[in-house]
Length: 320
Image 1 (cartoon, rainbow, N blue to C red):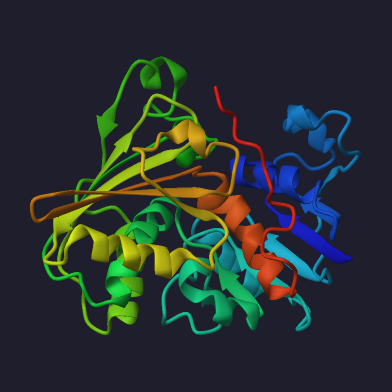
Image 2 (image 1 turned 60 degrees about the vertical axis):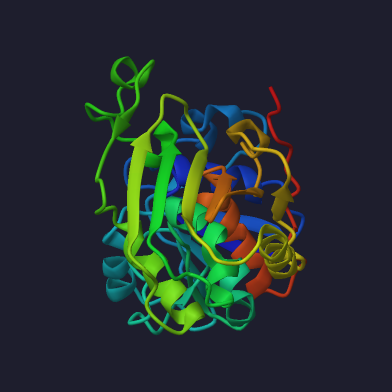
């Protein structure tokens, strides 16, 4: 049995992680830390867990667990590791952006479809960003074959949970509902990790990536449309994608244009390919809180502890 500890368990990703781990046959949750909710029953904050758990949020940190999930805000994980003596036997999985780059040599980049073997041997793993996950899954097969030669254009829309639990003008219900908006055009922070992964896989810097992120008026899910000019014929491209993802259980290729409801509440990613003349379109859909965050963290944990990659992650999509 794997003893797990969560640091920062009161937010959206912490709550989603709890839901998955409580039903994982190989995991026991030792403690759930929260600065803001310490002393409260977990089900008082994550109310859907009523009857599922008697865990109480703690103000102290359990630093001797087999695995610690860091579910804090960006910038806080580095400070936490610097200021606490964590057992050398403890594996760390960080869900922030603090350790996602190659210069952070003590952490392995945690995108299993790119880095599975390294994750299996890692002590510390940095979970990818949600947009970064969806976009990289769309492009990894092309990068591996060194086929990214022309400018890449990305439009992607995410649900409101991607912005976290704290309220602001652009996350408030009355602003978000019946609304859609563009933010951080061409400058989104996930571009850096996308470019680094593609460079390492392709062996050279990828072409320019022009990324337009949108805020959607739904709660969860990401749909990314990615397109670029390509020389190869469509059947060759399909073969490349099928070969790349054949050993990755959570990525499904679809002949039909996918929608977000197919993946919400699952760790699944659906990829759809469409070619128009010399333009290749790749549509990628994921649940931003699961494959884009907490589910991927559990997938990484499974790999790190030698479990079946799908353990605890055979989740039901919402459907309708």
